[in-house]
Image 1 (cartoon, one colour):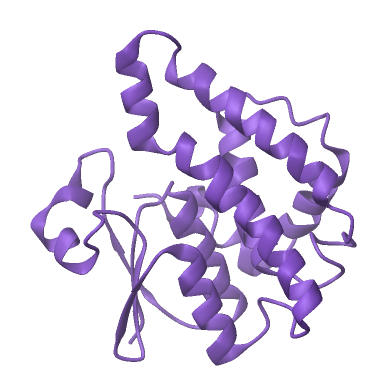
Image 2 (tube, rainbow, N blue to C red):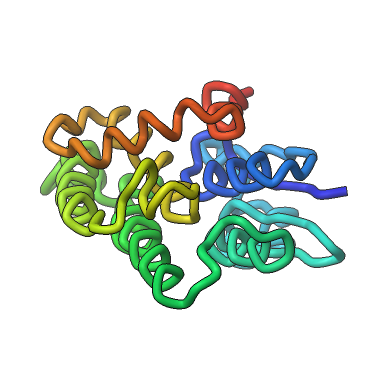
Length: 203
């Protein structure tokens, strides 16, 4: 039995839900409410010492960090990254541009801290860094086809979809990102992607 400990609006958990759906891997969801602080509870910290989500229990392993989980799923099931090293590196670069540059400085704990500092609202902070990051991402889409890299859904797409969900939720103007938004429109047509949307899994 595959178990996923997640939060419905977590970008990282959203990535993993899409990956599992695309690979047709059934799983049980166990919600961890970030707004209520359940991620800091003893049970979650025992599973995930960083006090984060997601955590995936699979194949007798307990895995954390969404990109590590996605790469494990690719290595054991295939299909989430190109096989050849050069395009694989390009997909990783696109993925990291979102998961390591935009998402960490716009996550809940960072936004809450910024909101207490008074220099900028957490919403303004989030809009600034998402806009900056996605503008660079748009320029990086040199190998794009129907999706971020050619016509295969990859880890980069799994990073992009949640980031656009967050961008739209906080009022980022995404109309200046035509390539990005066409890719997202294509991705949203895929049933496995649509099924992972936060509105489909929220409590």
